[in-house]
Image (cartoon, rainbow, N blue to C red; front, side):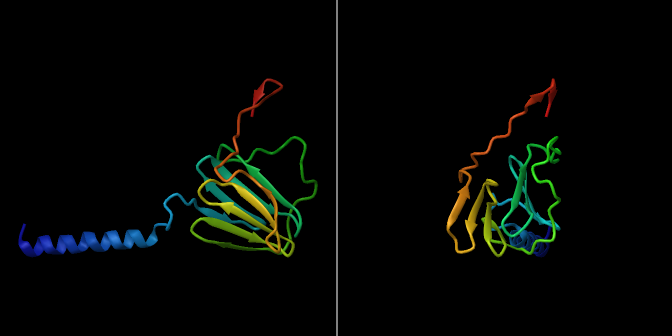
Length: 144
């Protein structure tokens, strides 16, 4: 390999590394999220967390240890959620959902969820270190 070829190869790998660094998240632990029609789904190490905006004051949270969200036998929310106005934004560490009455913050590293009033007063919060554990349960001999 000639000196010129080696120099071009080094430049190519340097440029490739810079491009790769530009598309990686700032925090390597930050998890990807998707905005849905009625909320957000965050893909965390322990499984997906889905936040559904039912109204400006009602937020439905689902978490699963698999890629699917099992449908409950007794629905928690009777009417389907939808039509509520909300915005979604994010930083390297947090996904934010805002309605006129509530703010929801989802930690991108752990999937933990916090609820705040529109003025930022805490309402309810999971443990910030990922305190949620999902364990299989047997109902009528079937594991879910």
